[in-house]
Length: 199
Image (cartoon, rainbow, N blue to C red):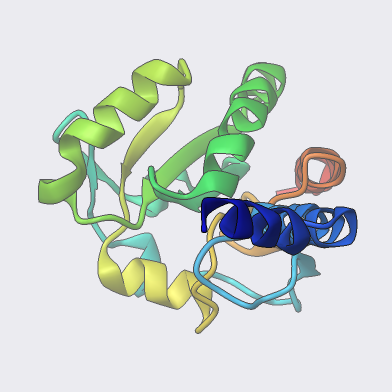
């Protein structure tokens, strides 16, 4: 009886089935890298002009990990990168080290960066603190108010999402998902574009 089971197992895992299984898992992993919680394709969208953020987003008081509020209106006159993310999101974890590098590169030129988690602040306080330490994040981190996240995402719930905002409060570029070979360079180009604008 045991020999029959052993023969059946050997017949089931043929080289072709092993190869197909490995290929399928590889494809699932590759597609999972771009974004979490959505079927949205990876995209870098040029915002239509004018695409100023509404006052409800600019004036909203998002909770900072330091306890104080984060108001986007306080960054008026500066080029700003806002990143929506979550601790459980694999692509967000891949993107964060790149954002830390971008912040170090552009901080001296006046670019501000804010990371807003889409998680519940009460439930995720410890995991967000651990995330900040793990990735040596040196830019402002907090939690997006629900209405702020919904307005920024415009019905596309995938994360990460990043927004390059010009000095006049207009979204220059929006990035949905993350690809290590494309996204960092595209974000840098958008920041350069925003810095080059008179404002």
